[in-house]
Amino acid sequence: MNDSKFMQLLENILMPIAEKLNNNRYLTALRDGFMVALPLIIFGSIFVVLANFPFLDRMIGEEAFAAYQSALGPASDATLGIMGTFVIIGIGYKLTQHYGGEAIYGGVVAFAAFLILTPQVLEGVSGVIPTSSLGAEGMFLGIFTAFIAAELYRFFVQKNWTIKMPAGVPEAVSRSFSALIPITMTLTAFILVRIIFSYTPFDTVQNFIYTIIQEPLTALGSGLTATIIIVLLTQVFWFFGLHGQIITNSVMDPIWYALNDQNLQAFQAGTELPNIITKQFIDSFLVGSGGSGMTLSVILLIFIIGKSRQLKEIGRLGAPAGLFNVNEPIIFGLPIIMNPLVLIPWILAPVVATVITYTSMVTGLVPPPAGIIVPWTTPPILNGFLATGNAWQGAVLQLVNILVVMAIWWPFLKLLDKNYYESEKSAK
Amino acid sequence: MKRILLACASGMSTSILVRKMEEAAEEKGIEAEIWAVAQDKAPSEMERADVLLIGPQMRFMKKKYSKVAEEVGIPLDVIDPVAYGRADGEAVLNKAIELIGE
Image 1 (cartoon, each protein chain N blue to C red):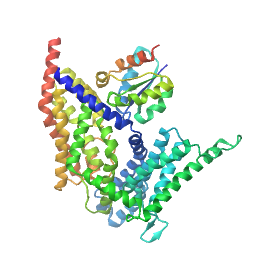
Image 2: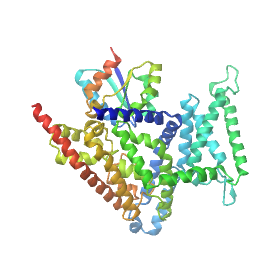
Image 3: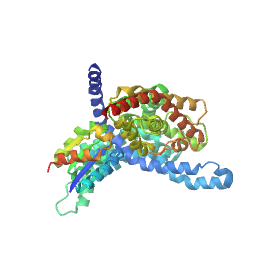
Image 4: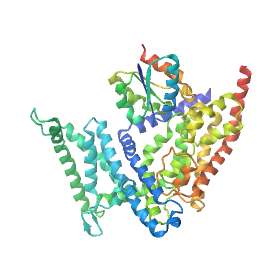
């Protein structure tokens, strides 16, 4: 009785947090903006994998390999390399759509505002926009710019500061004129911001955001302790039946993607990878091993030790989806939710896997994620191979993690199975 | 024709249920169009649905969806976690039909 009261209390705390985080219009726009960029990011990642195909340089020779790489290069440069661009347009679009405005104008005004704040000179050559600032490096500035630009645009539209066309003017013409003044006002504000910043020691807003927000935040997010806390939170949310990954992603994605991008640039340049914690650390080595909580191990364990009909049924039902890291059938079916019997392995296993993964990468046994975005629905083993930039060690690490998670679950699942089995026997 | 919309985080786990619900509908001889979408698509898809069912792990979206559902005049509810875990197509189908209420 006391137990369920405690559970109720926790649920009462967690539910509003989940609701707030998920319904916050800025976090929603951020998440949906990333969704817009995701297909392009994945496309670019696939080409990074292809361009760095293992042993190919030895098979076709150095020169041919260099030509091959430069032929494929633009695919990732135009997508993954400037991912900030798509995220910004996506956020501007989604936020404006949320307010019921002409969404595409929200998208382009956000992008233009971002370009206004971006340095347009590189090594003394003007009229050049460095692609690095359109990538993850410019993403934080882009996110804030997109929020503010979309808000300003909406504000001016709602103030009705628009040019009204007389009746009889074609709809498309009057619509582009109705956007004219709000866009002009919004972008003028950003020009002013740019000018003001040129008089500060930071010189550009880009520098300012980078020094004040992006660098400290990414430094924090790249640590093991912070990651363990996030992993714990994700598991606790899920334990109460709330989609933990969606909730933590909405806050952590900008940081994880920025860390990812630093690694990608180093990987493509052939230098040492600066980060271990990245988007792919989470997506491949935790989520990508059977879904949140790495439950593919649980399914495998069911096949090995499961005696009860109920558990075997859940295993059969959950296996095909689990292979692609969709694990709601197990989470709700076992069930894991609100089930005190499995609370310990549910929370403990991903934390142990995090420590193992981190340690093996910090010691150099396994290369860190190469910054390639592998879709989280990619089956484990293959997932770890691709995420580490075609390194077999990544695949082995995933296998080790799966076995470790199985070992952690073993006594608890055995107990659960026994309970089910006995109640099935007595039911007969 | 019953048009049943399911929504979850990315429309993946609910799509497992869609298949089971379609099987159940066919068995019972009920004409139904059942489809699953990701959370951000749900509001725009509601217009052509008779009912919206939300995956239990996304139940914190209920309040937000309720506003839209009220506007387009369709009922909605969170799918029962047990039925969800068992991918019990029949139970969820029955619930959907009960919500549509004809």
